Length: 86
Image (cartoon, rainbow, N blue to C red; front, side, top):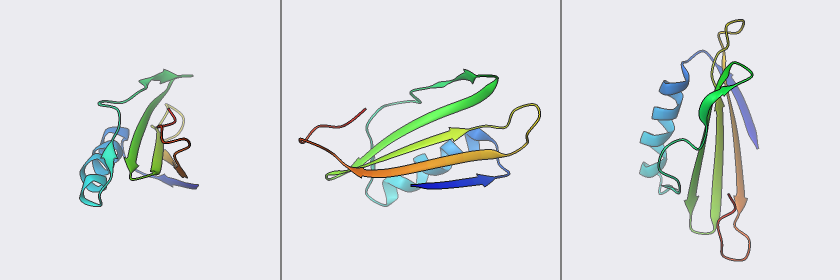
């Protein structure tokens, strides 16, 4: 698992992963953000990708009114029993 905090808007971060991950062989498993709504007044996006038996989950939280930083959590795991974990 990796966590990064950066100064960028949530849509820019999501667009980066959607542009770059397919170039590296990752396929998005869900069209569109699973969550793209406010959670405690903080925008949130969840992206799911897979490559072979590997799964990649990316959670991006956008800046809130009090915080100008965007945080990204990335978790990589192997699929169990041949099915995607969602």
